[in-house]
Image (cartoon, rainbow, N blue to C red; front, side, top):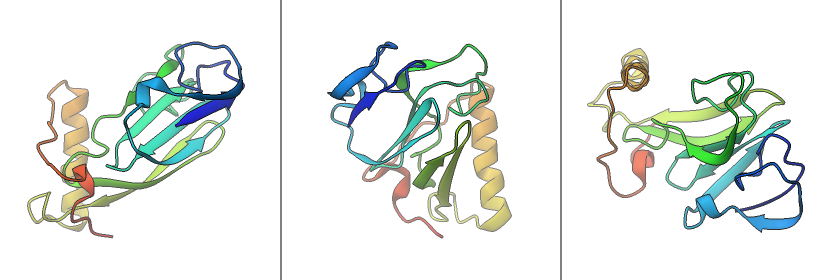
Length: 151
C-alpha cells in the first residue's frame, strides 16, 4: 500500500506528520495484502485480505476504534483486535470525516454453531474480554476469520 498527500495527524501511516508529495510505501504494512482502503478527514483504515483492520491517523472522536480518544493519534498503522479473528469476517470498511463503519460477517461454524443474536453476543463478549485484558487468540489458519462466513 502506498499513501501520499496531507499528513497532519499521521494518517498516511509513515510514522510522522510530514506531507508526502509522491506515493510512498507504508513500510509497517509491507507484506500485508491489502484488499481495501478507506479514508476520513484525518484517518485511514486498511482492510487486509484476511479481514484484519489496520488504522492510523486522528482519533479525537474514537474513529480509529482503539478505545483511546483525544490525544491518541496513531502515526503508524495499528491492527485492531477481533477483526480477522476466527468467527469474525470483515468484508468492507468505510469512513466518514470522523467515524468508521465496517461490514462484519459472523461464521456459525467458527462461533460454535451460534446464529443471530447469540452469535452477536459471543462477538460482544470477545470485545469485552479484550477490553478487560483477557486476550482471545486467533487460532485459525487459512484466511483468518473469513473462512465459512454467513451473511
